Length: 352
Image (cartoon, rainbow, N blue to C red; front, side, top):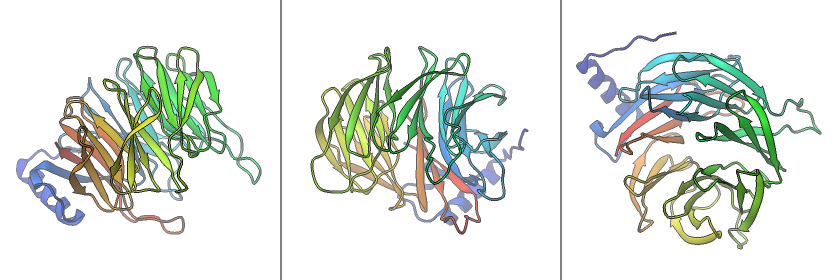
């Protein structure tokens, strides 16, 4: 389903100024930031290099909508150019740019969906944990996804008290292996494809290293030994210097870790964090702070926050353009289980 474009420069400027006034005060100039509403339940994003497109997973209304919608956006204007309905609500997202296949985690359904990035056609869906939820049965929830383009493999974290990582064959959409024992509520995933290493972090504060050649856990390192409550959620890698950046949703700090031995190199003073990305072009780290309603730009050398971008209400996920010049943020509206948000969630484009 194609959606109409509005290309008049005057209208674009008007929409930009209107969206900025509605969104609130920003610490960057208006021409550096563009904010647009996309759809209810906006979660993770993926960028298609060949098609120069930004894909956004939206779960839509919990009560009124069956399934969700995956939007293809123009990365410059943030206007929707395609909407793909998904019978299973999409949350996590990644892309294999070699095969031009998008992958979306369906947390509620315990499944993963493959979509053709060229056409938007749903290629198939694979059940990962189809057990029916009950008082005694808690199905694992697919959360983060990462694609190994060289081997056409997708890794998906299955989150629970005893988490796993599912290994999916991208060629035929089948489950190749299940890596168990990754820890309590292990959400994060990051891949060093050249080294054939996959990393996750558990709620128990362990950095877990996995050999992707054998799908075996090689090591687990305890990152913190204090009595504080921690919730390590996401991880980003700088493979050139063997650094991992790990967000903590419970403490106002981000860990910088040498992922070869688990040694903590630094603790970045920043609000409680959710998503994280590393930009090798600028040697910068970006993190979303859901509670603070902001995004931090962190210098990769000094580990200092050099810029704070106000992005109310709840900044969620991040995506980075291939050239490292543009950052994208999904921003969620306030909602509760009892009362859903009345407005659609937003996507913000930030020129770095």
